[in-house]
Length: 68
Image (cartoon, rainbow, N blue to C red; front, side, top):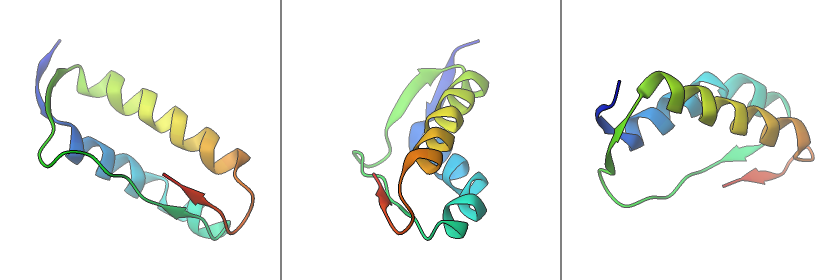
């Protein structure tokens, strides 16, 4: 179900969810978007997609690298 969603909040939650894995590899994770990016979204699915993307980025980024 699509609901008005603060995309920034979802991104922040996903980054926090993977913080330990990123920290183990000494990775810097940063994101930049317009302030308060509101969208209509299925929050569960967006979190799943962003989580998969971040997991893969952590997995394939060399230690000490940066993910943006």
